[in-house]
Length: 215
Image (cartoon, rainbow, N blue to C red; front, top):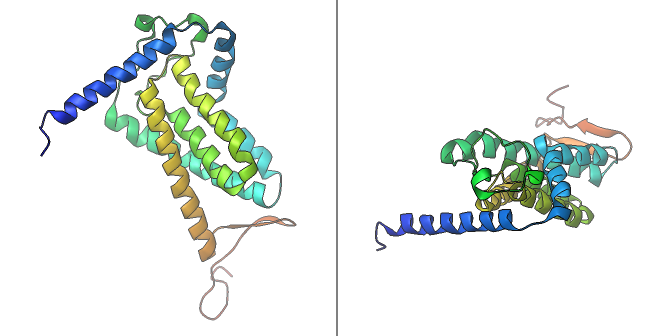
């Protein structure tokens, strides 16, 4: 049986590694990257990138439109899980950018919410995963974009690497749950049916006599 002090000791070591990684990123001069990563971080506020991609995909019938629906559902679930549950349960303080001497050129506004997990990363990862499953050609570019969003949150000094890693795990989980829900609803006839000619229509479930319950 493990010693009762083992778990706190391990968590303490992990926090030390997390802080060291944050400090290493802060101490590494990257003037050629600072502006670009600051812009990526800004663009990911409120999932603007994901919703913009979803809007573009929704204009195309068939698989792209289904991918947009799955992506938006995943972002919604990931954001709720991160902000309504994760941050309130853990309540980790944000990093101290001044103490770490993060370059001012990297700064974005420091959020007032708790640090763990990274909501930006959770939402970006959830969107990339869900869309990539439904629309495989989009997996690589959206996955790369999600990785850039996650790193940008460390680079700009508003998150520890551990926050980002946890956000990515949460995003994968949110995508899996959303895809399962969308698939289950579709099989039961309660979801949107995407038609190349008529767009999105709502399928009503049928009773045992074959009549639509909503008719």
